[in-house]
Image (tube, rainbow, N blue to C red):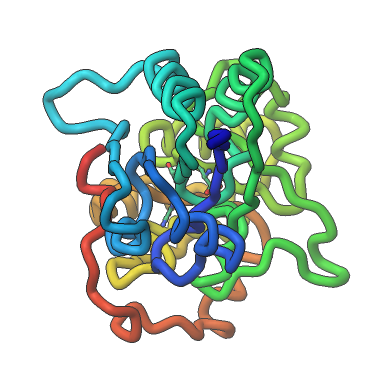
Length: 260
Ligand SMILES: C[S@@+](CC[C@H](N)C(=O)[O-])C[C@H]1O[C@@H](n2cnc3c(N)ncnc32)[C@H](O)[C@@H]1O
Protein backbone atom coordinates (compact mmCIF):
# COMPACT_ATOMS: atom_id res chain seq x y z
CA UNK A 1 0.00 0.00 0.00
CA UNK A 2 1.27 3.48 -0.88
CA UNK A 3 1.70 5.79 2.04
CA UNK A 4 0.53 9.38 2.04
CA UNK A 5 0.91 12.38 4.32
CA UNK A 6 -1.91 14.76 5.19
CA UNK A 7 -0.78 18.09 6.60
CA UNK A 8 -3.94 19.07 8.45
CA UNK A 9 -5.03 22.23 10.24
CA UNK A 10 -7.00 21.47 13.39
CA UNK A 11 -8.26 25.02 13.92
CA UNK A 12 -7.84 26.82 17.26
CA UNK A 13 -9.43 25.92 20.59
CA UNK A 14 -12.63 23.91 20.31
CA UNK A 15 -12.34 20.56 18.56
CA UNK A 16 -15.19 21.20 16.14
CA UNK A 17 -13.37 23.99 14.31
CA UNK A 18 -11.50 21.35 12.28
CA UNK A 19 -12.75 21.16 8.68
CA UNK A 20 -14.87 18.29 7.36
CA UNK A 21 -11.94 17.26 5.14
CA UNK A 22 -9.57 17.33 8.11
CA UNK A 23 -11.88 15.10 10.15
CA UNK A 24 -12.34 12.70 7.21
CA UNK A 25 -8.61 12.08 6.79
CA UNK A 26 -8.06 11.93 10.57
CA UNK A 27 -10.64 9.12 10.79
CA UNK A 28 -8.66 7.11 8.20
CA UNK A 29 -5.19 7.65 9.65
CA UNK A 30 -2.69 4.91 10.54
CA UNK A 31 -0.56 7.43 12.45
CA UNK A 32 -1.11 10.93 13.82
CA UNK A 33 1.82 13.22 14.49
CA UNK A 34 0.55 16.12 16.58
CA UNK A 35 1.77 19.02 18.59
CA UNK A 36 0.23 21.30 21.20
CA UNK A 37 -2.54 23.85 20.62
CA UNK A 38 -5.06 21.23 19.60
CA UNK A 39 -8.05 19.82 21.43
CA UNK A 40 -7.04 16.46 22.89
CA UNK A 41 -10.40 14.92 21.94
CA UNK A 42 -9.45 15.18 18.26
CA UNK A 43 -7.03 12.32 18.87
CA UNK A 44 -10.01 10.11 19.72
CA UNK A 45 -11.21 10.57 16.13
CA UNK A 46 -8.29 8.53 14.76
CA UNK A 47 -8.90 4.76 14.48
CA UNK A 48 -7.92 2.72 17.56
CA UNK A 49 -4.97 1.13 15.73
CA UNK A 50 -3.45 4.49 14.79
CA UNK A 51 -0.16 5.37 16.43
CA UNK A 52 -0.34 8.78 18.17
CA UNK A 53 2.97 10.61 18.27
CA UNK A 54 3.29 13.83 20.29
CA UNK A 55 6.01 16.17 19.02
CA UNK A 56 5.20 19.34 20.95
CA UNK A 57 7.04 20.97 23.84
CA UNK A 58 6.93 19.54 27.36
CA UNK A 59 7.92 21.55 30.44
CA UNK A 60 11.50 20.77 31.42
CA UNK A 61 12.16 18.66 28.33
CA UNK A 62 13.86 19.42 25.08
CA UNK A 63 11.68 20.54 22.25
CA UNK A 64 11.43 18.04 19.43
CA UNK A 65 13.71 19.29 16.70
CA UNK A 66 12.01 20.12 13.44
CA UNK A 67 14.32 17.85 11.46
CA UNK A 68 13.42 14.93 13.76
CA UNK A 69 9.72 15.58 13.17
CA UNK A 70 10.24 15.76 9.42
CA UNK A 71 12.28 12.54 9.44
CA UNK A 72 9.55 10.72 11.38
CA UNK A 73 6.91 11.92 8.93
CA UNK A 74 8.93 10.80 5.90
CA UNK A 75 9.79 7.44 7.50
CA UNK A 76 6.16 6.57 8.31
CA UNK A 77 4.85 7.58 4.88
CA UNK A 78 7.65 5.61 3.21
CA UNK A 79 6.58 2.59 5.28
CA UNK A 80 3.18 2.78 3.58
CA UNK A 81 1.11 4.50 6.29
CA UNK A 82 -1.59 7.13 5.93
CA UNK A 83 -0.07 9.78 8.21
CA UNK A 84 -1.91 12.82 9.51
CA UNK A 85 0.36 15.64 10.63
CA UNK A 86 -2.05 17.60 12.83
CA UNK A 87 -1.24 21.23 13.53
CA UNK A 88 -3.11 23.94 15.43
CA UNK A 89 -4.92 26.54 13.34
CA UNK A 90 -3.90 26.53 9.67
CA UNK A 91 -0.86 24.47 8.62
CA UNK A 92 0.38 27.30 6.40
CA UNK A 93 0.60 29.96 9.11
CA UNK A 94 3.76 29.86 11.26
CA UNK A 95 3.66 26.06 11.32
CA UNK A 96 6.78 24.70 9.52
CA UNK A 97 4.67 23.52 6.59
CA UNK A 98 7.36 24.29 4.05
CA UNK A 99 10.04 22.17 5.79
CA UNK A 100 7.73 19.15 6.00
CA UNK A 101 6.12 19.41 2.55
CA UNK A 102 9.51 20.02 0.90
CA UNK A 103 10.98 16.92 2.54
CA UNK A 104 8.04 14.81 1.37
CA UNK A 105 8.33 16.17 -2.16
CA UNK A 106 12.10 15.58 -2.19
CA UNK A 107 11.51 11.97 -1.11
CA UNK A 108 8.96 11.53 -3.90
CA UNK A 109 6.17 10.85 -1.40
CA UNK A 110 2.57 11.99 -1.96
CA UNK A 111 1.01 14.54 0.36
CA UNK A 112 -2.12 16.61 0.71
CA UNK A 113 -2.48 19.91 2.56
CA UNK A 114 -5.79 20.34 4.37
CA UNK A 115 -6.30 24.02 5.27
CA UNK A 116 -7.41 24.91 8.75
CA UNK A 117 -9.10 27.81 10.48
CA UNK A 118 -6.23 30.03 11.60
CA UNK A 119 -6.15 31.48 15.09
CA UNK A 120 -5.20 34.76 13.41
CA UNK A 121 -8.79 35.10 12.20
CA UNK A 122 -10.88 32.82 14.41
CA UNK A 123 -9.54 33.84 17.81
CA UNK A 124 -10.30 37.55 17.33
CA UNK A 125 -13.69 36.59 15.88
CA UNK A 126 -14.50 34.54 18.98
CA UNK A 127 -13.88 37.77 20.90
CA UNK A 128 -16.27 39.68 18.61
CA UNK A 129 -13.44 41.23 16.57
CA UNK A 130 -13.54 40.88 12.76
CA UNK A 131 -10.27 41.88 11.11
CA UNK A 132 -11.88 44.19 8.55
CA UNK A 133 -14.67 46.73 8.97
CA UNK A 134 -16.07 48.58 5.99
CA UNK A 135 -14.92 52.19 5.95
CA UNK A 136 -12.71 51.70 9.01
CA UNK A 137 -10.20 48.91 8.34
CA UNK A 138 -9.83 47.39 4.89
CA UNK A 139 -6.54 45.55 5.35
CA UNK A 140 -4.81 43.48 7.98
CA UNK A 141 -1.30 42.21 8.66
CA UNK A 142 -0.35 39.07 10.61
CA UNK A 143 3.11 38.80 12.19
CA UNK A 144 4.92 36.62 14.73
CA UNK A 145 5.87 38.10 18.09
CA UNK A 146 8.87 35.73 18.08
CA UNK A 147 10.37 37.72 15.24
CA UNK A 148 10.76 41.13 16.90
CA UNK A 149 13.86 43.21 16.08
CA UNK A 150 14.55 46.93 16.56
CA UNK A 151 13.86 47.35 12.82
CA UNK A 152 10.58 45.50 12.58
CA UNK A 153 8.67 42.30 13.16
CA UNK A 154 8.55 39.24 10.87
CA UNK A 155 10.75 41.23 8.47
CA UNK A 156 8.22 44.08 8.12
CA UNK A 157 9.29 47.56 9.30
CA UNK A 158 7.64 49.08 12.36
CA UNK A 159 6.56 52.01 10.18
CA UNK A 160 4.60 49.68 7.87
CA UNK A 161 3.18 47.71 10.78
CA UNK A 162 2.13 50.90 12.55
CA UNK A 163 0.30 51.94 9.37
CA UNK A 164 -1.60 48.65 8.95
CA UNK A 165 -5.30 49.29 9.72
CA UNK A 166 -5.45 46.03 11.69
CA UNK A 167 -2.36 44.33 13.06
CA UNK A 168 -2.55 40.76 14.40
CA UNK A 169 0.39 39.42 16.39
CA UNK A 170 0.64 35.67 17.03
CA UNK A 171 2.97 34.36 19.76
CA UNK A 172 2.28 37.72 21.30
CA UNK A 173 2.95 37.33 25.01
CA UNK A 174 6.74 37.15 25.23
CA UNK A 175 7.36 40.51 23.56
CA UNK A 176 4.11 42.33 24.26
CA UNK A 177 5.74 45.38 25.82
CA UNK A 178 8.29 45.77 23.02
CA UNK A 179 5.68 45.33 20.28
CA UNK A 180 3.40 48.02 21.73
CA UNK A 181 6.31 50.41 22.38
CA UNK A 182 7.75 49.95 18.86
CA UNK A 183 4.36 50.58 17.27
CA UNK A 184 3.87 53.80 19.25
CA UNK A 185 7.43 54.95 18.48
CA UNK A 186 6.70 54.31 14.78
CA UNK A 187 3.68 56.59 14.86
CA UNK A 188 0.68 54.50 15.94
CA UNK A 189 -1.63 56.51 18.17
CA UNK A 190 -1.14 55.32 21.78
CA UNK A 191 -4.94 55.56 22.17
CA UNK A 192 -5.53 52.93 19.45
CA UNK A 193 -7.82 50.14 20.74
CA UNK A 194 -5.99 46.88 21.43
CA UNK A 195 -7.16 43.42 22.47
CA UNK A 196 -5.32 40.45 23.90
CA UNK A 197 -7.19 37.16 23.57
CA UNK A 198 -5.88 34.17 25.50
CA UNK A 199 -6.84 30.53 24.79
CA UNK A 200 -9.38 31.68 22.26
CA UNK A 201 -12.35 29.65 21.01
CA UNK A 202 -12.14 27.41 24.06
CA UNK A 203 -13.70 27.10 27.48
CA UNK A 204 -10.62 28.95 28.83
CA UNK A 205 -10.95 32.03 26.61
CA UNK A 206 -10.07 35.33 28.29
CA UNK A 207 -9.93 38.84 26.87
CA UNK A 208 -8.15 42.07 27.81
CA UNK A 209 -9.25 45.30 26.14
CA UNK A 210 -7.23 48.49 26.54
CA UNK A 211 -5.44 51.18 24.58
CA UNK A 212 -2.21 50.24 22.84
CA UNK A 213 -0.28 52.24 25.45
CA UNK A 214 -2.02 50.67 28.45
CA UNK A 215 -2.27 47.03 27.35
CA UNK A 216 1.16 45.82 28.61
CA UNK A 217 0.41 47.10 32.13
CA UNK A 218 -3.02 45.43 32.06
CA UNK A 219 -1.39 42.15 31.06
CA UNK A 220 1.28 42.57 33.73
CA UNK A 221 -1.56 42.63 36.21
CA UNK A 222 -3.85 40.03 34.60
CA UNK A 223 -1.16 37.51 33.52
CA UNK A 224 -3.33 35.92 30.84
CA UNK A 225 -1.74 32.57 29.91
CA UNK A 226 -0.50 31.52 26.45
CA UNK A 227 -1.36 30.98 23.72
CA UNK A 228 -2.61 34.46 22.94
CA UNK A 229 -3.34 36.72 19.97
CA UNK A 230 -2.85 40.49 20.02
CA UNK A 231 -5.07 42.68 17.83
CA UNK A 232 -4.24 46.36 17.34
CA UNK A 233 -6.65 48.64 15.50
CA UNK A 234 -10.08 50.24 15.53
CA UNK A 235 -11.69 46.82 15.02
CA UNK A 236 -10.73 45.92 18.61
CA UNK A 237 -13.34 48.28 19.95
CA UNK A 238 -16.06 46.06 18.43
CA UNK A 239 -15.32 43.42 21.07
CA UNK A 240 -17.86 44.77 23.55
CA UNK A 241 -20.65 45.42 21.03
CA UNK A 242 -20.21 42.10 19.20
CA UNK A 243 -19.43 39.83 22.15
CA UNK A 244 -21.21 36.60 21.23
CA UNK A 245 -19.06 33.73 22.45
CA UNK A 246 -19.69 32.26 25.86
CA UNK A 247 -16.66 30.09 26.81
CA UNK A 248 -18.94 28.20 29.19
CA UNK A 249 -20.94 27.01 26.17
CA UNK A 250 -17.98 24.92 24.98
CA UNK A 251 -17.46 21.50 26.47
CA UNK A 252 -14.65 21.53 29.01
CA UNK A 253 -12.09 19.34 27.36
CA UNK A 254 -8.37 18.85 27.82
CA UNK A 255 -6.28 21.11 25.63
CA UNK A 256 -2.64 20.44 24.89
CA UNK A 257 -1.53 24.00 25.51
CA UNK A 258 -0.51 23.31 29.08
CA UNK A 259 2.65 21.88 27.58
CA UNK A 260 4.33 25.10 26.52
C1 LIG B 1 3.21 28.58 16.21
S1 LIG B 1 1.83 29.63 16.00
C2 LIG B 1 0.80 28.58 15.08
C3 LIG B 1 -0.35 29.30 14.42
C4 LIG B 1 -1.34 28.37 13.77
N1 LIG B 1 -0.78 27.64 12.68
C5 LIG B 1 -2.60 29.09 13.33
O1 LIG B 1 -2.85 29.25 12.12
O2 LIG B 1 -3.38 29.48 14.20
C6 LIG B 1 1.13 29.59 17.62
C7 LIG B 1 0.37 30.86 17.98
O3 LIG B 1 -0.94 30.83 17.46
C8 LIG B 1 -1.80 31.54 18.34
N2 LIG B 1 -2.85 30.63 18.82
C9 LIG B 1 -3.09 29.39 18.40
N3 LIG B 1 -4.19 28.88 18.99
C10 LIG B 1 -4.65 29.85 19.80
C11 LIG B 1 -5.76 29.96 20.68
N4 LIG B 1 -6.65 28.96 20.80
N5 LIG B 1 -5.93 31.11 21.36
C12 LIG B 1 -5.07 32.13 21.22
N6 LIG B 1 -4.01 32.08 20.40
C13 LIG B 1 -3.81 30.96 19.69
C14 LIG B 1 -0.94 32.05 19.48
O4 LIG B 1 -0.51 33.35 19.15
C15 LIG B 1 0.20 31.07 19.46
O5 LIG B 1 1.34 31.61 20.09
